[in-house]
Image 1: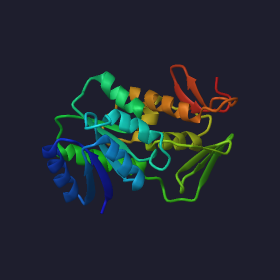
Image 2: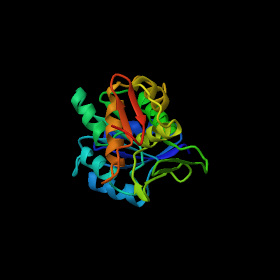
Image 3: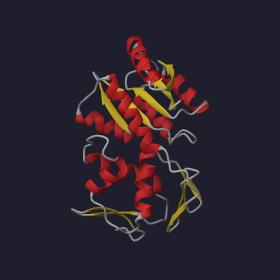
Image 4: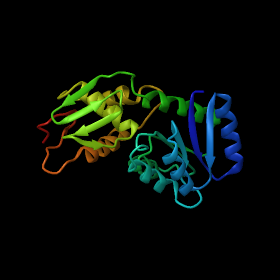
Length: 230
C-alpha cells in the first residue's frame, strides 16, 4: 500500500471515479462527504494525505483546511484542495489557508494520482535522527518536530520542507526560483507567488513575542534564514 488517503467529496460519481483510480495505484481510500466528519476522522486516524473539496456538506472545505492546520497531530498532513474555483485569488486563498496543492475541476484522474504521488514524495521526511539548529530554533527530522525556544511549532509539510532547506543553509539568500526548485521540485509548474505565500505562513508560525524574526527578505533577491533579520 502506497498510503492511506482521506477523500472529502460530496459528489458520489466523482468519489467512485477517483477511488477506482487511486485504489488501482495501491492507495487505500477512506471517504466522507461531510466536513465535520472529515475533521473527526483525520483526528482519530491521521491519513497520509487529504483530498479536500472546497464545497462540501456542513463545514466548508476551506474551514476544514484551516482547522486541520491548527490541530496538533494532523497539522503536518498534506492537503490537496479539489474545487470548481479556478480564479487566481481563489487558488491563493486556498494556499494561504493551508493547502499544499490545488486542483481545479474538471481534471484528469491521472493528473490527480500524479499530484498525490508528488505531494507525498515531497512531504515524507528523510528517515534520519539528524537534528538541525539555528539560533533558538530546533528541527527534529526523524520526529518531524520543530521547536523555538522550547515551544512546539505546528507546521504544514510544505512549510516544514521550506524551513529545513533554509536551516540547512543559514544566512544564505535564496531567490524564489531557487526555492521553488529546492522545495517543490520539478514535478510540475508552480506559480512563483506560491513561494511568498508559504514564506508568509512560515513567518507567522515562527513568530514569538519578544523574539527577532528569523526570515529576512532581501529586496529583488529572495529570502534567507537570519537571526538578524531586518
